[in-house]
Image 1 (cartoon, rainbow, N blue to C red):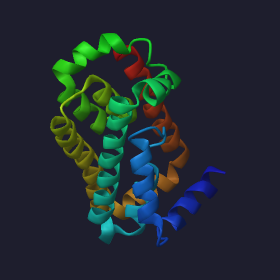
Image 2: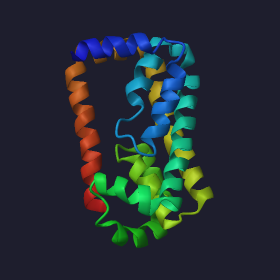
Image 3: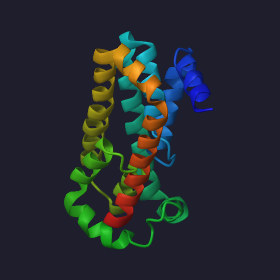
Image 4: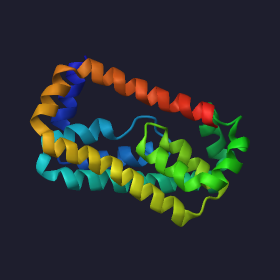
Length: 193
């Protein structure tokens, strides 16, 4: 089943609607969706290495705009939308203690969330709730998300065929490792907040 899903993703990545799908996934992941856009970014760059920079740009723009939407959820809709999202991920109870820390270290927290497997949606909503300066938030988001997606695209562009062979050979291990990193990000945030 995993191989079929991988093959489907690789074939979809060449579809004319793939860029819009990548933009959409990057957007919703930054505001409420738990699955990172890397699942589409990787096969898209592997399938069309010549478009690596364009693909990274679409992913970055979608992610930053989704982050701004997440900021808006926290800022405008915290009680009706933001708190339930944080509660769903198990972060609502400890959030008040986190706010004071956030005001002091906000830009660094956004940057860390943008680069690591930490759930970025929690960071974006928290930025809105705490009222982190929007310019600081946006700059930290553009730099960290851009660095992450352009670095992935650059590595795939440079090492293309060997990385594709490696992924196809160790697909189950890579998916398991990705899941562990994603889960680890949620656990890390739970203990940091």
